[in-house]
Image (cartoon, rainbow, N blue to C red; front, top):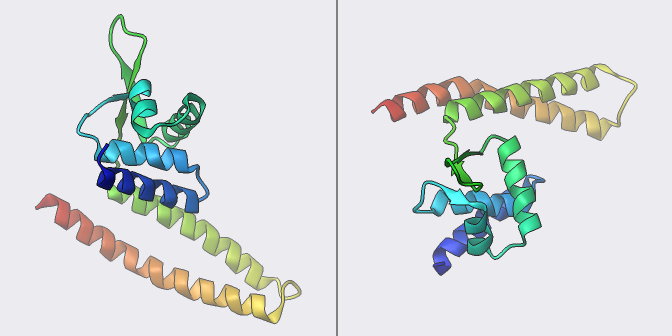
Length: 152
């Protein structure tokens, strides 16, 4: 595997790791994103990433559960052929928006509880709410700009 490709795959692994997900799953995702093949088998992934079969199995299962990849089978062949699933960025924006709304709701509940928290934690909650409100005010425009850009 080319050194530059290996570096990019590792960067995706690090991003996953920083999100609290296994780096192996990120490396597998990076492999799909940089592969010249539409489908990869389990053995392809093990071989290309030089990972153990159990690590690859766990990584694939997470990516399947997250719906980042899917698989198909060929008649008479026991192998699974995995493929990256393209997600519309609009769906991702909607997921972010829903998660931010849930988090904002909890923060507002915390803020309403006057006998809970320190002065500093209350200040932090206020600042997070300000930031969330600003970010969420930009989401509709971001979605609109994104939809316009992909239609061109």
